[in-house]
Length: 302
Image 1 (cartoon, rainbow, N blue to C red):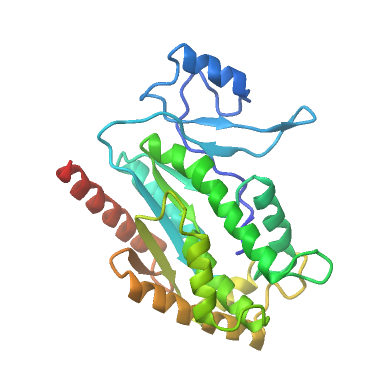
Image 2 (cartoon, helix red, strand yellow):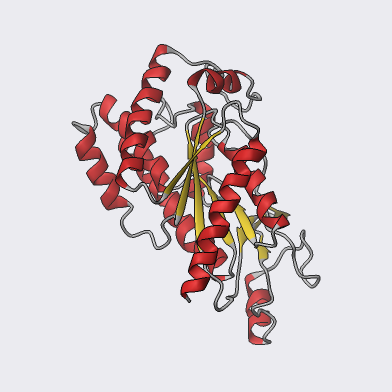
């Protein structure tokens, strides 16, 4: 479940080789054995590694293994305010890439690591991931949980997927850290001002190995976003998760300001897509074309 209220489960890349059915649980030793036998090669698209607890298969973490020389890698992050429709757009882009024969994998907002599971529980209690009275977190520790989960993704999931030659489509990445946590840390009085927060968060994220090559900022007018928030399914324990108070609107405004600053700082990395009243297919096509053009430029440079 992401902070937008969707609960799609962990999405697994396809296709899987016939030797590794989609639902099969692979032990670490089994993977090692296949590597030793040469069973994992550039033709291997990916494997699903499933953690087992008490004999029951747990939700999958999408991991791609192997390498494909000469194929440019690319991580595409999808950012946007609550209700903008970024997850739906991400899924439409994934389908569009498949139609063009471009391998891609969809990466959830939260991982299945202990850090990610903690955040899933937290977002169910507060849609902005703010600490609540009895969850034991503070604004600082909640920030560190989010950053830790992003580093887990970076090393354990994104890196292997890119090494396999897939385009990684990530639901939220480091920009989310900046524009969602900065207002929380300032308004809570934890850190004095936005400049200090952004400096600290930049330092925390500076060792990520795989920053986004392209960031799609999904935009929609506030009125449409509020309508979508009101229609969310009831995954939240928080009673006001489907409403927007004056306090919430102030948070949205602060985030808008920081997002605008981030885009102005790195304009060539961002692609802003209007996902308000336009058909989602239109926005998806725009993103697919941007990915295809970047891939072509990279291939020409090789």
